[in-house]
Length: 170
Image 1 (cartoon, rainbow, N blue to C red):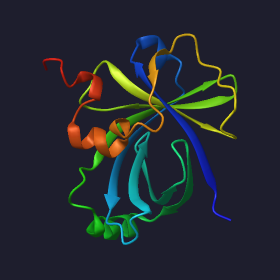
Image 2: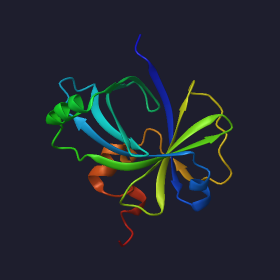
Image 3: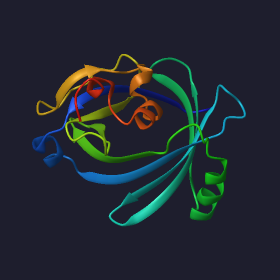
Image 4: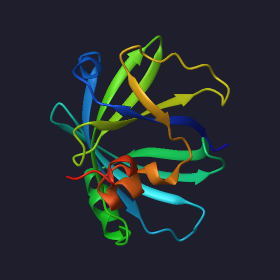
C-alpha cells in the first residue's frame, strides 16, 4: 500500500519570535524531474542540515487538495546527481530554507524563499483531513493556501515571488 500524505499549507508572515521557537534549520534544493506519467510528480532533493547533506527521491500522485500518495526514499549523492540529468527544464529548481517548529506535539514546517524577507509558507502533515490544528500564538497566519496551485513550490520558484507580493514594488 502506498503511504498517504495529508497536509495543509498556510501563508504566514516571518518574525523573529517565530524563528526563535524553531528547533532545526535545513537548506533545500528541490528539482522536479520529467514525468513519463502525467499523474505522477517526481523530484529529487538535496537537504543540508548543520553542514551534512542528504539526498531524497520522491514520487507523488495527487488525490485531492490536501491528500496525495507519496513514496520517498533516501538516495546516494551519486544517484542524486544522475537523476539531475532527468530534470524538467521547464521548471525552475526550488531553493528554500526549512525551519521546524514543534508546538503541542505538532511538527510545522516553515519554508522561507530567497525572494521574500516578509512571507513564508507553513505546512503541517495530518493523520486525517479533519484533525484539529493547534496553531502557535506567535505564528502570524495570513490565510490557508492548501490546494491553491499559485502557492505550490513549483509556482513559487517559477514566479520568483508569492502571489500576494506580485503587485508590490520590489
